[in-house]
Length: 77
Image (cartoon, one colour):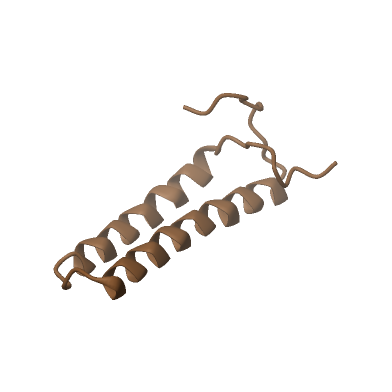
């Protein structure tokens, strides 16, 4: 069975990568904030959120590929 839908807690390396990317996404969000309210700004922010979510999947898959799987944690938090 694949790990495709299983929750995997980030290890230290993955956490560092995620935090570095998060700060970059937050910087972009700050740059976008002054744009006029409307459809295009909303689409921009939605795409930014989607891109951030996909980085999480990529980081998770890279961690699995390294065979570094911290103990499965059924509850997130």
